[in-house]
Image 1 (cartoon, rainbow, N blue to C red):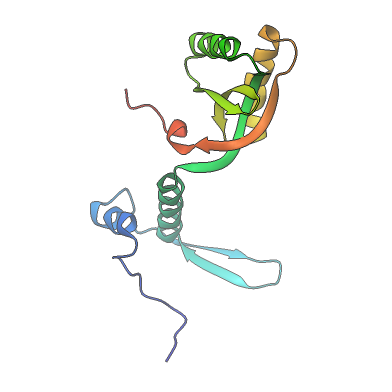
Image 2: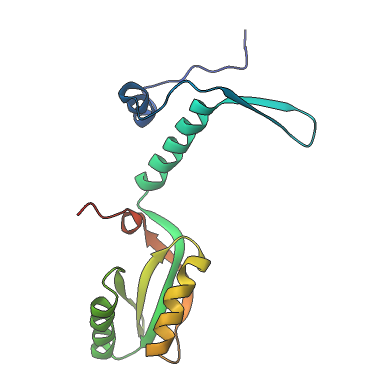
Length: 152
């Protein structure tokens, strides 16, 4: 008989199980009720919401590369010029990672790892002061590890 409720299979979700076992600040809290536009009342315990958020974060960082955005500073066929620009970016903006990519016949220098285009706008604007032409926000596969806060 199907009851509509599925047991949590802890062996499939080790991070969730660890979160439950270690406490992770999950305490019994009152259930929250919300009403959908269709009139259905949805009652959900806040601990479940926290577990789902932990699970989402775990899955995000379990996959290292994601669709995101970078700021492209230069696209040139001169490898030495591309390396000079990358070195300059690493000195001037040490908080961001700079990337040198080769797509024949051009070397592209890109900087930063951003989940949204809006997050990249301040960096693009500051780079336009140094490089007056050719600074664009471009879609790219970004490194999720670069988004983690430093543990230094």
